[in-house]
View 1 (tube, one colour):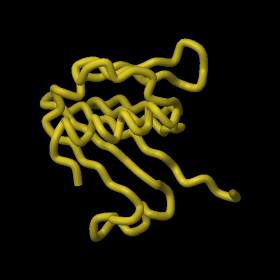
View 2: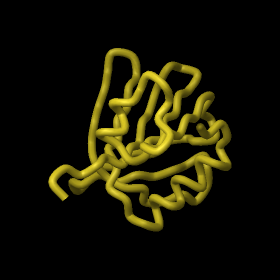
View 3: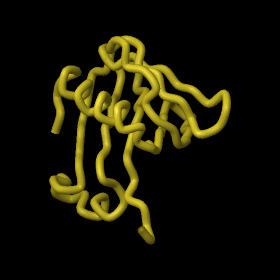
View 4: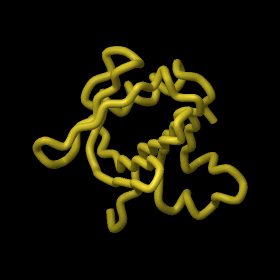
Length: 112
């Protein structure tokens, strides 16, 4: 589990360098959105940019302002979430004071 912005930056930089394909899920009140993309820029923790698979799809978030940060990989899935290991390799989830949540995950590819 990651509990600091600094540790989350290490994961995001790894994904940025590897151009990892991410499932990006945002939840805010009655709205949820899911897309696929990659980390484009991690210049500083107040402005992390992700771009989607389609032209014009982009998202920016303030990592430094997150009140909760959790990292999970399939090798160390928390008790009660065992089924998650069948679908994801890694996941970084963040939440902010206003209730907005963001989950960035590297999904396991079936049939490979």
